Image (cartoon, rainbow, N blue to C red):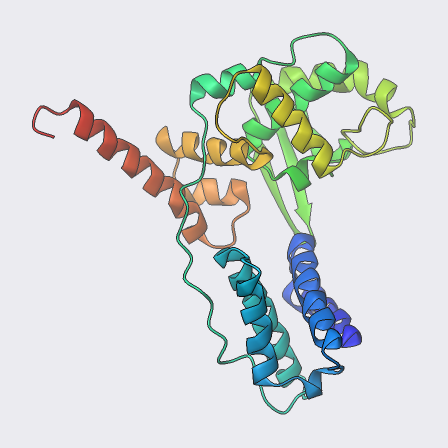
Amino acid sequence: MGNHIDAFILYLHNMKKTSDNTELSYKRDLYKVQVYMEDRGISGVEKITKEDLSGYVKNLEEQKFAAATISRNIASIKAFYHYLYKEGIVSEDISEDLKAPKIEKKIPEILTMDEVIRLLNQPKGDSPKEIRDKAMLELLYATGIRVSELITLKVSDVNLQMGYIVCRDSNKERMIPFGREAKTALLKYMDKIRDVMIGNSDSEILFSNCSGQPMSRQGFFFLIKYYAKKADIQSDITPHTLRHSFAAHLVENGADLRSVQEMLGHSDISTTQIYANLNHNHIREVYAKAHPRG
């Protein structure tokens, strides 16, 4: 089964131009299916039955995985079996009858402008680490990029003069502007600190950890948690909270959804629509509280 999974990922990469994150997600999901089947003595995609796939989904439910996780796993299985059937590797698409659980759409956690300012003002010292942290936080909120994009940025992806960064994923790329606060923080970091922290003049990586190696997702996760605590922010903040806040604040201040979609890199505008809905909910709450006949 493993060879077929690898071939499927290659097909996605070459033919569908999927992102690295999407491919990693498919691979992780499908290899879990492989392990489940092999533990039950089933090897080879042609030997897997509809009942086996249903059993796998039931096993996920019994392990109390979230509905969103189960839905993603089912989507991975369906895409894989559609590929196998199309390529003539299996004679039937046995995933057709798999039903994804209903997912309750969660309203994303966003910060108020006051909380954002308090968070961004936390790295206030002149140590190399604080100057780097300030640049990372400012850039994350200024652009709304994913943490995976932030930690893989290269120096050549940053145009300080024009005030934008370039995010690349497979064959896609998008240009995202940033404002003066982010520019000031980046300039200070890139001019005075980056080379000292990285130590290797040949390295193209923009942000590194204190050992000069590329920053990890987990490393940045702990970093933002640390500054959120210092800023006395009570909500359970993650790096994605700044991405949500970036989008919600843009929409709240009149940005059109198409532009926000492009900056966020959403393939489907319905994903971006949630920020408009969030804004409408906020307006309704204000009306209910403030209107004399609300």
